[in-house]
Image 1: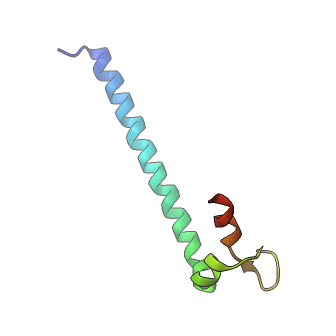
Image 2 (image 1 turned 90 degrees about the vertical axis):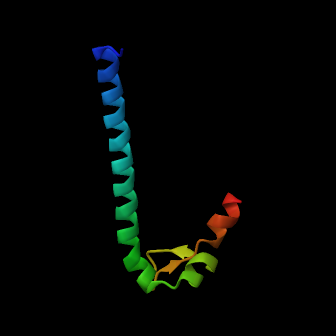
Length: 72
């Protein structure tokens, strides 16, 4: 039979585990929601295969090909 202390610790771990999943889902949701406005303005082909990353230019350039190549 589980003692009260063991059940309490299991309860605490369960709450913290579910809370971490909840916060992770929230972070992913916010990132996707905020990125949809940028994706609507930037073509996905230009984003993936673009060679320049100048978000402060006018017009801004968002290319992640060098970042992908560097990661590989």
